[in-house]
Image 1 (cartoon, helix red, strand yellow):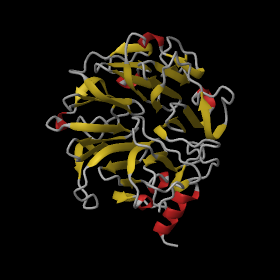
Image 2 (cartoon, helix red, strand yellow; image 1 turned 180 degrees about the horizontal axis):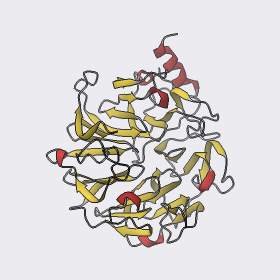
Image 3 (cartoon, one colour; image 1 turned 120 degrees about the vertical axis):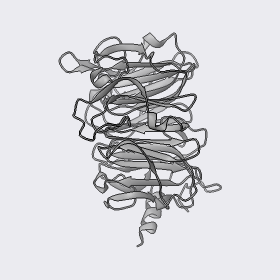
Length: 410
């Protein structure tokens, strides 16, 4: 059987229900959620712990709804459905799933998460860190759950004013006076963006990841004052952070041991290299940045005219423009950086991946390492509307076939 035929079979294998997913930025387009990558921690939500080399659809037992958001952490995932209900799966320890009925071990299938919302409020955005999860509501409230920290090892990313872990979603009360519209979770920290473009940070201060010019931990949200102008998008890596202003300028801060901040300098950076305040990525100052994604080692960004820049991994200390004949004239509209791999989405709904084949996150049905963006052929004839990358897994939102209720690839 050809590789394309195998991909098509994988796409249709689990097509009994019409479910969808997105990245941390919800999409208004009904879609189906496909995942691939490492399955040992249950973060694929496919009911087993096998690695998945080709995209497969996520099923929600007993439900038949569309999903509007998908977030991928290090070893867990969170999904927001069209009715604004949350689901989580993957490693349950530290309470990161928000399912107190199972707060340890592996949860291999989507499990409901109860958020203590007030009145008619509903969840509209989500993100996953390594050991915690965050959600933002329509009324601008923030809820977090998972690992809170320990006195000897440092703070987690919950923002509740203490180091207590939370097995269920809990409101970040310190932000009640702000209307938050986006959250982004790193390994031990969280960022929140308000409707007027301010950014708040909390969690572990090590490596300057909070942007407060200090390595001090913050158990409650603190305003980052060093970003000039309103911010339209935030992103986090393991120990780094990024913000795009309304004017399209990119600012980065935090750990810089592999050049992931794109600020230049020697490739012989030591493990303690950092930038403690938001710093303009000068190499991109003449570009208008539309999207950015940070992994633990490298960063991807795309411009409003669809070009892609990449840096980090001790290879490119400054942003390097990615040029590939494979992409043709199809502009890139979204980027996603994982551990040792990259994913991009184009305007016509094509997904391209490249990086280490050992991550099993490239979606081509094999473990071959790819040094150039390569089309994920499993989605041929379908339109992908959003992508998200975790440490070792990927999620993609795919429009259902029109007039085809079984949501198969063909």
